[in-house]
Image 1 (cartoon, rainbow, N blue to C red):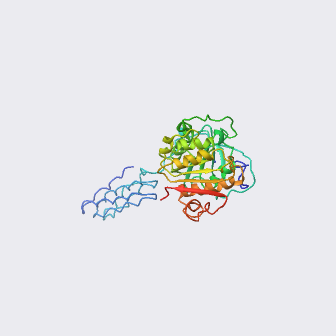
Image 2 (spheres, one colour; image 1 turned 60 degrees about the vertical axis):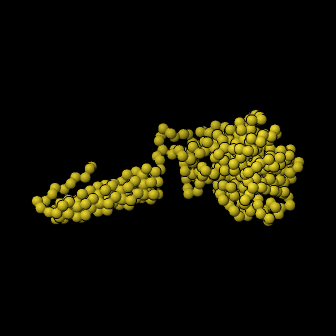
Image 3 (cartoon, helix red, strand yellow; image 1 turned 45 degrees about the horizontal axis):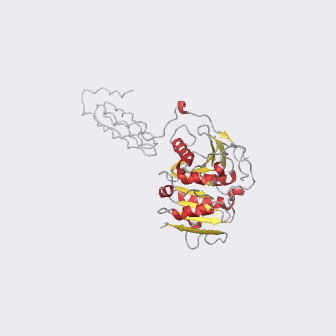
Length: 376
């Protein structure tokens, strides 16, 4: 795991008109309004035109910024006649779409850093990774890029653990690798937690914890006091999980906000076609070969998907996968590629090209079998 990860990571007055002269031409006209700003500062109101010795009237207030820009600055001074110059009216107003200000009443305690084991291999992504528990999200562990608040907006990934475990630090190598490529990854379960969620036949109910994770992250992206404020791509979301956690992801995948789903070494025990018919976005089933206990179920679920783009890929690593290997092993590489394609538009060999096309990466790798459908 990333040696570059630090201790808290793997190891946050109204204008007054001047008096008129005894003679003179009429008052100057109003200055033109400053234009409405976008993300930058609005322009200055133009000068009032000059009248003889009578004051120019006030310049019109500058327009408000539409998205984060300051309102227009004051109207410039009118060109006065002999009697003196009339001052343009000040016109700065807050833009209606400007950035919100944090209300102190909405502030929450800082997240708690989480120390997890490190295997030594550096992650392959460009972001340093933080692992933490956020007091605003009970029963979850967060893996995220350290750099928040910049230009990059991070897609959201909700993860269900194997055995529906409530230990959110079960697979830090795999989840940390994903986060290093610029994703907010929310694992179900407390850091070093215990117990598990029940595995039931109501798969939609099983998926509810992953939907709750998405709900929280999307809300935080719009909350001015949050460290995630305007740092997330709230319209780019994935649900994923391994084994029992894969059932959680399958049950959550029908949520209309889900952009993609990945089912790792999993498939419904008692098939429910309604779950598959609710799918509306691309889905991948990644299996551990014929020795993977979930191989028959995952293969069947792939076959029973209908109109959505779908991929079935398998390699002989068994049900346990490669999550605990450095960077999540080959499953980490496949996960980064799928998310890169589906959530970030990577159409090259490190994204789409790994899964589709005659010479796709997994197509030409003898360790893998792969098929796809509805990709046009």
